[in-house]
Image (cartoon, rainbow, N blue to C red; front, top):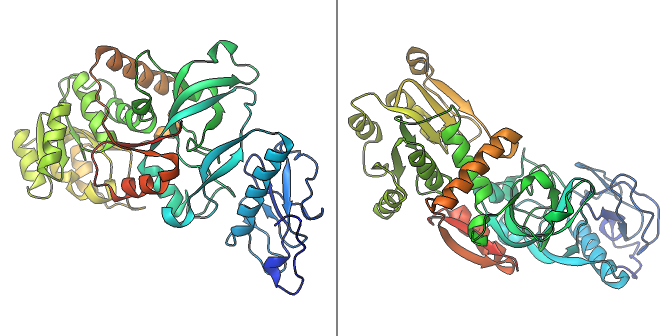
Length: 423
């Protein structure tokens, strides 16, 4: 720890220079003494913390090996730096907050910690939200377990992209009248290190949406990934009035909302589930027909429901598992809208697509454009005003219980959404 001289005979790990800045980026820095706080980082405008003496630095996503130590794999020194930073903030009077974080990939119980981090300040075009709730989605545990692209993209990550709370500060260029607004937000941890599993988050103002009066904060933590994904998937190719839409996995968080969006826009909805309990759940959401894929022949049932034609559109959560059936269950000139996959590759019945003039289309909700996001928000607000949107909260956990929350979502045996109560 700071204030202790490393034993030169203790091996490479004892002679480490670990550097972390408040914005979550490791930076190369090969000068300074143990416990010293060097000049502010020119790239990130945040203080660095030095732990130990010369030996190893971390720069971006690359590990720089000196003295035989790999900072990417030996994350204890980075964590030590983060903890030292929190202690420095305490003694220097800087604000600190509680947050969950990880600095290496792996199972929730092995890598997630809850502790103190520096409270962020909003930059130009940003707002700061004092979070009350944080939504836990499948993409969160997948990113924590295997990273995005197979590697951890930042030295330290505060997970989760969805959340809700109250704006308490704004940066340059943002209307000060937004302070005090109840809001929900999206993209909290998309292509950036610090998400919503914390007391505060700073992010771009356009990703922080005013919450209608009376809307529940726990439900609002489910509007980003679940609702906006559902809306974009259903409405991807325009109006669906009079069409038959197959929603794969209708009891999931996205599927449950997709059923409701499709029904609100005049579609007939067929959905697949894995149990009788889930069948009742999706019927309550408005599904017209339900197929239990564990006990029934899915193609046979769907063709019987559609006079042998198949579905006009398929809203797909797992193309790698379900693609082999498309040749049988997709109508001529039909479209599959894909928002998820369990495996990196999928086998598609190409000849059937050619003959049917069918289409495969793909998207990821994090990169919808401004017009698509505005369309989704308008649809959400209308459904909230009409009282026609049901958002199920399967279970709520405290921030300290984030491991249990991640494990529950990963097990995927629940119905509805999992939410952390932050404050």
